[in-house]
Image (cartoon, rainbow, N blue to C red; front, top):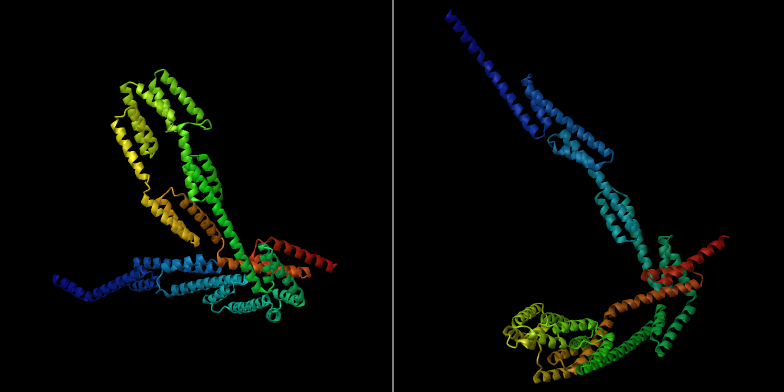
Length: 616
C-alpha cells in the first residue's frame, strides 16, 4: 500500500514539472513588462507605459498592481490632454502668454516620444510663434508709418525692410516701401528746387516744382513756390533796386563809421543776392576796424588800471594806506581779476589792521569795548587786583595783539604780582602761545611770548620758542639780493620787448618771474598788470568769437534775413500764404524771432478776412 501511494506521488510530481516551469516564465515576463512600464512612466512616456502594463495584464489578468499603475498613467494622460485643450482655448481667446505657459507645462511633463501629445504641442507652439511674429510685424510696420509721417524716410525704410523677417508673405510692406521711395524722390527734387530758387535760378526751379506736382498733385509746397517764382520774375527790377539801396546804404553808413548799421545793410544786400562778394568784403573790413577800436579801448583801459596800481603802490610805500586803497579799489572795479591790485589791496587791509591795533581809533566798531576793558583793567590795577587787571588787558590783546596801551599796562600788572602768582600767570600765557601756534596763529603767539619776556627776560622756554618763530618768519620773508635785482631788471627788459611785439602771454610769464625775484619792483608790477588786463580782455573777446562758429552765425543770420525780407515783399503784394511760408522758415532757424511770429499771425488774419469777404 505504501509502495502504491509513493508510486502515485512520484508520478504526480514528475507530471507537474512542465507546468511549474511555464508559470515561472509568465511571472518573469510579467515583472519585466511592469519594470519597463515603470521606466517609461518615470520618463513621462505615459502611453508607452500603458502599452507595457497592458501586455503584463494579458499575462496576469488579476494583477492588482498593474491595474493601479495603468490607472495612474491614464490620469496623467487625461491631465495633459486637458492642458493641451486649455492651451488651444487660450489661444482662441487671444491670451498668448497664458497659452505659452500652459504648453510649457505640458512640455515639461511629457516625453517627445509620446507622439500623440508631442504633435499637438508642436502645433500649439507654432501657433504662438505665428501670432507673436504677426504682432511684431504689425508693430514694426506701425513704427515705420510713424517715422514716415515725420519724414524720417531712411529710418522708415529700415523698419519696412526688417518687417518681412517676421511675416515673409506680408504684402502691406511692399506698398509701404514704394511709398517711401516715392517720398524720398519727391523730397530730393524739392530740395533741388529750393536750392535753385535760392540761387535766383527761377526757371530751373519752376521746372523742378512742376516735376514734383507730376509725382504728387497734392503737394502743398509746390504751388506756393511756383507763386513765389512768378512774383520774383515779375518784380525782378524792383527787387534789384531794393537790393541796390541796401548796398548803397551800407557804404554810406560805413563812411560815417556807423559800423553796426552798415553790417546790417550789407547783410540785407547779401540776403537778396546783390553784389554778395563785395558786401562780404565790406563786412570783413568793418569787423577789422571794430577789432582795432576794441584793442585801443582795451589798451587805454589797461593803462588806466596800471595808473591806479602805480598810485596805490606809491601811497602804500608812504604808509598812507587808506589813500592807497582808494586808488586800488578804482582799479579793481575796472579789472576784478587783476592779481597785482588784489595783492596790494590785501597788504593795505593788513597794514590798516595793524595800525588800528596799536591805537584803536574812535571810528572802530571795537572802540567802546576796548575803552571799557581799559577802564576795568585800570580799576582792578588801582585796587591791587593785578590778576584781574591782567585778564582785562589780555582780552584787549586778543582783539588787537599790537595794542601798545594793553602791552605796556599788562607788563606793569605782571610785575606787581607776587613771584608765585607771576610765574603762574606767565605759565598760562605761555600755554596760550603754544595753542595759538597749533592753530597757526603765529603772529598772536609772538605777541604773547614778547609779553612774557618783558616781565621775565630770563624765561627760557618763551625765549627759545620766540627765536624759533622769528627764524621761521625770516625764512618766509625772502631777502632780495643785488643779484636778484639785477636778474629782475633783465627779465623786465625782456618782457618789454615781448610786450612791444604783442606777445602778451610770454610777457606776463617773464614779468611774473621778475616780481618773484624782486617783489618791490614797481615798474615790473605795473607792466604785468597792464599785460594781464589786455590778455584777459583778448581772451574774453576770443571766447565769444570763434571764427568758425562766427562764419556759421553769419550764414544763418543772412539766411534768416533773406526769408524775412522775402516774407515782407510777398506780404506787401498780397501773397499771404507765400509770406507765411517764408516767416515759418525764419522760425525754423530762429524759434525766438518774435517779429516773424507776429507777422505770421497778421498774415493769417488777412487770409481769414479775405475768405470771409469772398464768401459774402
